[in-house]
Amino acid sequence: MLKVIGTGFGRTGTDSMREALTILGFGPCHHMFEVSANPVMKARWRAFMDSGEPDWRALFEGYNSCVDWPSAHYWRELIELCPDARVVLTWRSPESWWTSFEATLLKHYREAEDRAAVGIRIMEKVFGDRADDRDHAIAVYEKNVAAVLETVPKDRLLVHKLGDGWGPLCAHLGVPAPDQPYPAKNTTADIQARFGKP
Image (cartoon, rainbow, N blue to C red; front, side, top):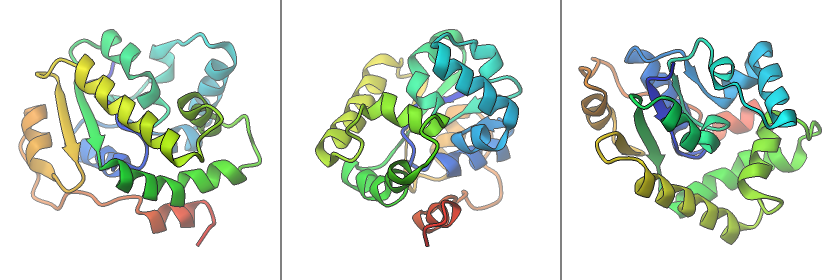
């Protein structure tokens, strides 16, 4: 089952963390991109969205770690299910997060035609019908950060800020730092291109 559980919202460096965990031997790493690209996972997550009854082992079958949504919305359940897993909260300042979120995921959320898509439904679970309300979204972001800090035992948790690189992560996971730069994935420009919004 999962060895590393990410609790940070999308747009906090989660795709870079996914690549980093893979490089460090904790892959495959579950991420929203994995759900979108894997028909089996997409079907399983859609079925869970419909039923509300999770089969966590099936939803994460074949994965050794998870970051980003949808899993970050269910971190409480996952840290109980996997008591030996290390926990990583990817973090950036709330204002910086909102700027990135508004320019990328929020645009996709507003314009997506498939309102039953897992990503759209997770956004609704996280933000209700107020994803485009800046103050509300930031408050939800800050509440999640506070809940992680209050809930996860300190010896299990790493708060990994943008720019922290390999050192804190490798120390937290007990592995040596690789001889290559820390990944820089899924920039605002990258995600706008992915969604066809240059």
